[in-house]
Image (cartoon, rainbow, N blue to C red):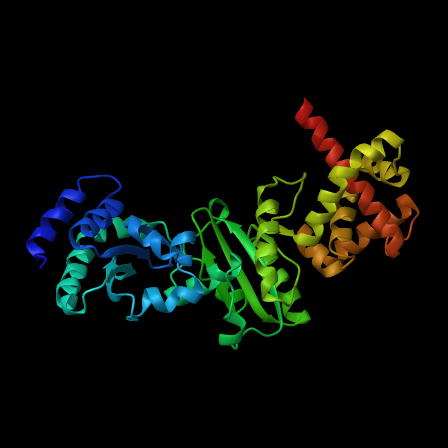
Length: 375
């Protein structure tokens, strides 16, 4: 039979080694044969004994508790294969995670419950470091659900979670761009959401949306000047992972001159398209003389007509949204648009004309960025 005093000695010795959690899990496994797993409050698997890999667990493979494995890891769910002890670890006044012990001898439960308590007390400092890096406080189940959606492990979620109706919008924010550690302002934007937090970024899924709600979310994010990459609305949960990968690529692009704080998927796609087609346009010697006249007007009279037109077209010719993006009064924008129409002698509200103008504006901006980088 195992002795708890021996475990004290094992844990103390393991804490002098690096990495601490991994060392404890391996040494306890060697002595008792039990498998030890450390899980953070967001569902991330921090460390485990190597024998856990023999079970072929999806969560061990992903180094994160998946939604389908949630009951196995985070509830007292004993099975024929093993018995389970789940020891909460509390630090800084909140639940920081769990010590999970999987063992085989049913008669040894009392010992492993005591062992779980001893380990939980010993590793509080290591879990405290994890808590300090966390910006979003939320129940573990919600965090695991969100992680599963964003990483393609959403099997069964739509069937078990009856809340998934309407359209969704996905948002990605880099932590370095977030001004406040407390991100409770998310609730002010829309009350139906789930959050997945990772080392350097935060992903949010707003769900249960209608067309009007979608525009309201875009508007509120612009008003709050929240730096983010944001998707267009979509209806199927299995598209979450595709949108996530797209937003990651968008967030890595520094953007063009005067790039908006909120990068919309549609706008970024236009920029990406013309990044590839610019050499072809330049080789063919194509240009738009209407825009050249606009640029000349800006140089000679110190106006901002070119940038005003670009923002107006990116906002789909919506005067209210464009004025908000430019931080000017609606009437000021209306006056500028009148000047632009007179200068380029074109109907900027005609769909075909608007697409042509925006295409050449993107081409011009990207070529100008290339020239600056070469210098």
